[in-house]
Figure 1 (cartoon, one colour):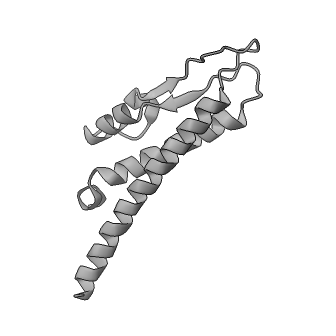
Figure 2: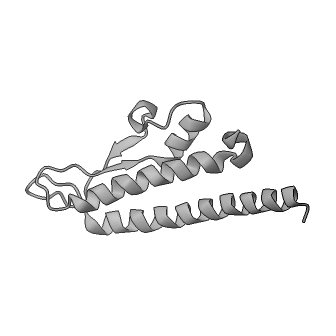
Length: 115
């Protein structure tokens, strides 16, 4: 029901939420030696989800490790500028998707009320 009601946007919102979690984990581990920054290939994950796969990123093959521009000596691949940019981009996409869903719910509510 939710898939037909919200279309691709329900899946997109879930994926963006998972991506925000990964990016914040990367930022939180910026000082952890050997930590490998991860991200989701959003387009691949969304395509897999629309193809009927679960939202488990490892199963969908959408989980990626970031390749650093300037590798650190301690093996940590988190680059704050990259993470901050990815976080901002994803947050904007999350808000846009949420706005679309909110608009859809408002339209349905008005239709049910007969406005």
